[in-house]
Length: 224
Image (cartoon, rainbow, N blue to C red):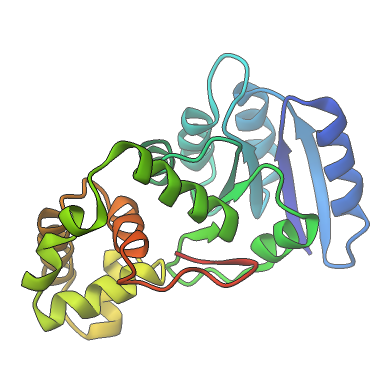
């Protein structure tokens, strides 16, 4: 059974999710709470497998709540629900330990699929959330030709690493896939970020996706 904790301050939505998860044959909901403090306490007490975390909570927000929950339960996967996807916000959540991002209005089957997705060193980004990230970058950054001018200078190995970043892999998993040291993989990632003018892996993937160097996500939650 997959043990799910819901952290959502909208009581109607939280209650509906709690009932819906409880109706799944392979899931149970250990509780639904509306604040970061309650989330940390219940996570420590119940050891859930997955926390579905609203990014906007009263008081302490979902990003800091994710950091605190991960500190209390390092093994838990935190999936962020957001209605306002920006590269900076999602990068901060990833740095806090989030394992995936879903649009708050995602269809329930997409949420179930994300919860059931295997852990394979990937960060899950639901299709609509990735689209919102690309649109967000379009509003605030230079045109694609300018933002991707460093693409021509990527080495063959860096293009391999970029493709794996597009699959949602972290540097440690990239190192394993390419049979190189973690230090080498991190060096490639650092070079890619510099050449693409990105500050985070997520931003680099958004830039590359927007410019057509990485494929758009298919329907449903996929790694990115």
